[in-house]
Amino acid sequence: MELTYPPLKSGSLLAGSHPAAGEQKALVLLEKNGQKVIYKTFAAGETMPTHHASVDVLVAVLAGRLTITQEAIPTQVKAGDYVIIPLGAPHSLHCLEAARILIYR
Image 1 (cartoon, rainbow, N blue to C red):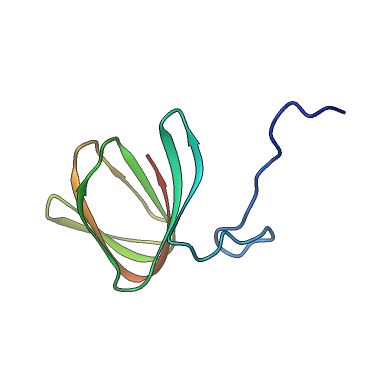
Image 2: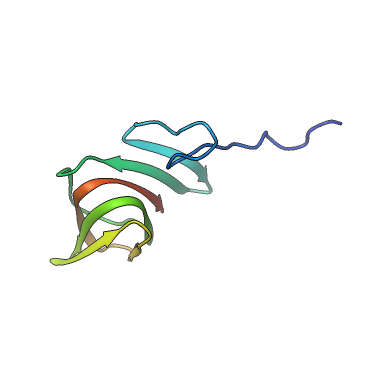
């Protein structure tokens, strides 16, 4: 049988049965038509300074606890939570516990 599509990609972001994504700080899992799905890890105490979203951004927290601040309003999120940051909104991040997140932008 001749394959028509690229092979299936798989991995583990949390400790599943597939090979682990590893401890890299950021890994682009998928990039298509200018959009990306990014896996990021943060150590406790790590921060990301204020920056602006160039598109609407979905952040899903896989593990840990973070504070995401948009326009001086902090929102604490933990594993299982998500936030949507609107296009152009200034935002920053402060990691309260070691964390793993998925970003769709």
